[in-house]
Image (cartoon, rainbow, N blue to C red):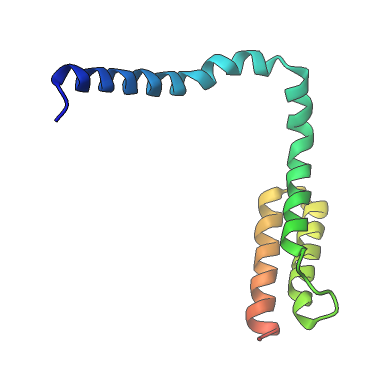
Amino acid sequence: MPEPGYAVAAVLVSAAVTWALRALPFAVLAPLRASATVRHLSTRMPAGVMVILVVYCLRDLSVSSVGALAPLSALAATIGLHLWRRNALLSILGGTAAHVVLVSAVLPR
């Protein structure tokens, strides 16, 4: 069993590290808000992340198979809804609903 002084020192060090890790984002946040690079990335990254997700989800899809109809139709529905209404939540929910309906009802495996 560790001595009481050692245990108290361990708790104090743990508390200091925890406090520092929680305070660090707030200390770094103010200079980042003034950064031109961060402002540029904040406008470009959402589209970039979405492109990466689409490529990742469709990377193993065989376009010649019937099973490709559901994901590609859902992707078309998502893009169409977004171009029509410009609402990300509606686009995501509509594309997901289209995929679920196609996979479960129209194209059973």
